[in-house]
Length: 74
Image 1: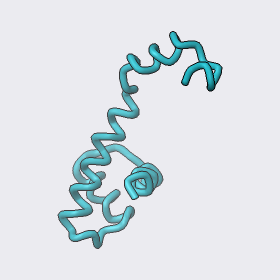
Image 2: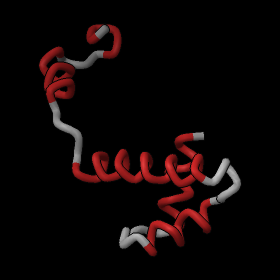
Image 3: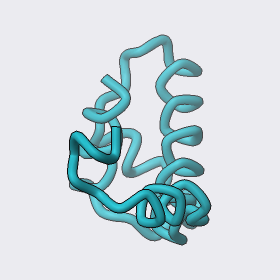
Image 4: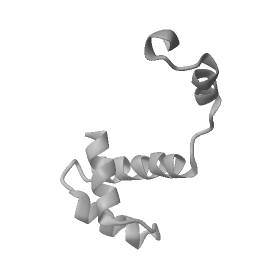
């Protein structure tokens, strides 16, 4: 596969070992929170309502970030 993509094997294996970034870890945690809120409310809540709930719980994030994460989760 590396030959076809013209990528050195060492780069491929370095990428596999790489730990997830702080932002990626935070996005995964927020996605779980968003999903929980969404299903607790029977799928009725949209991004602005979920954003308000998360801010009320002390999370520091923007509405756009909530929208992006919800879009990514489909």
